[in-house]
Amino acid sequence: MPARNVRPFLEALEAHWPDAKTELVYSDVYTLLVSVVLSAQATDISVNKATGPLFKVAATPQAIVNLGVEGVGRYIKSIGLWQGKARNVVALSEILVAQHGGAVPHDRAALEALPGVGRKTANVVLNVAFGEPTIAVDTHLFRLGNRTGLAPGSTPRAVEDQLLKRIPPDMLMHAHHWLILQGRYICKARLPECWRCNAAPWCGLKLKSPPPAEKPPSSKLRGRMTPIAIEDR
Image (cartoon, rainbow, N blue to C red; front, side, top):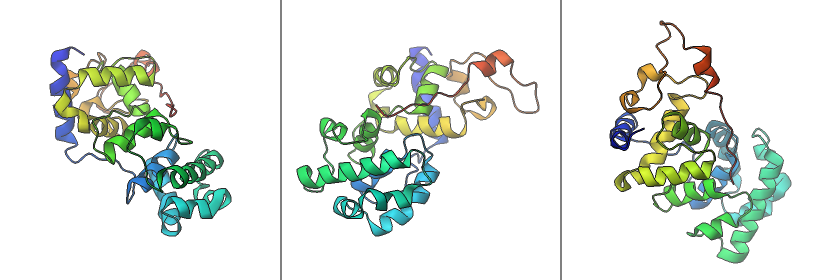
């Protein structure tokens, strides 16, 4: 994607998603942190279904510690990798109580030192809770960065670095949300719905997919659109 196309591409996404925000349901920084940890390789919908009942009985670090791994596990069994996530949520809560007075630190290094928290999760918390212009590269952003030519890279960190360089400073605060919603609902993993994408004129994808009534894209195009799972590292 040429540099001249970056701003109009993002402006088109902003126009389509003017109220873009995380779809995780949370009430404070701590419940946001727990929700993001649980969302690794899981949908926001599945996380919200589990955390609704969980947060009714335990919505603070000390309450989660008191509930214990087995207790937390009972609420999140519907989420993938729930055993490890239950251990991480309790362990990070213990650290918050012991080292941070029960508060979530506004510090990247301290966040990434917590069990189950990698760069992606830290970026989400720093952006959503603390208002920092960070970019959290999940599966959707990794795909869009490469597919559209906005920020090509072979790793999530490479895509993140490219996004930080190419996105205009005044758009960094919300760009992550525009991109994730676009990837989740329009520029989908197996077949992007280019016919209803208002950013298509500036997108670097050469073989745009046609509307369903038209001829489907070639097998070559489909083969380039295999989804890639991004773990939080």
